[in-house]
Image 1 (cartoon, rainbow, N blue to C red):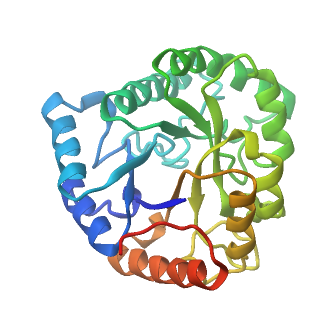
Image 2: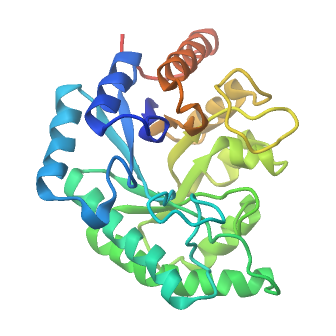
Length: 290
């Protein structure tokens, strides 16, 4: 498993500077934020895409994933990360999410990313049942999943506490509705499953057939959804990473620490130091720079 770091912790830096700092911290790869200020697809010009390619090559970074979850560029006053969602009551506002995701898929194809990640349906509108929300989500997602199949880029759903899909059983029900699509899968955020009371090591086993990318952050023992530097919360990462390995996952593991925008360099280095010690102590196959 190769370690990457998400550029969403480097919102105070242009992409090229974020890439340099992530490489210097010791990571092999980078997750690109498909949002301001790094790669908002709706106005990303060809020369800007080329600049992303050149920065990745210059600093020897692989492209682990494109994060199409966050939409700070829209600046929705309710919550800038998951609004507009796939299940907004207003069909025109839902379309903003749909169009953004399609653009992110094409961007991933152009840049060589194996996947993009997206939000799992948003909060339920007032008065809706969970099944109503799921039906709306599937109806909106299916045409985009068909595009993912066509361009052969994985469209990864990221379960999130408080949103439509937050538990492993809910994700399995979603995938049962989408079983005809080959390029739909799971962005396995370890901390999110811990927040909703699940054992991430068990989830790594039960959802193994769907995992195509991993987000890694720690969470306090209160299970409050706030990303912490690995080793500073309650997650047993040795068990979780061993479970991933035992169940056949060999892809990218991206450390996602967006709350640390004021000092992302320190957060990135502390996370890597902890994971390096963990890998040595437990013989875990985590790859990073020498």
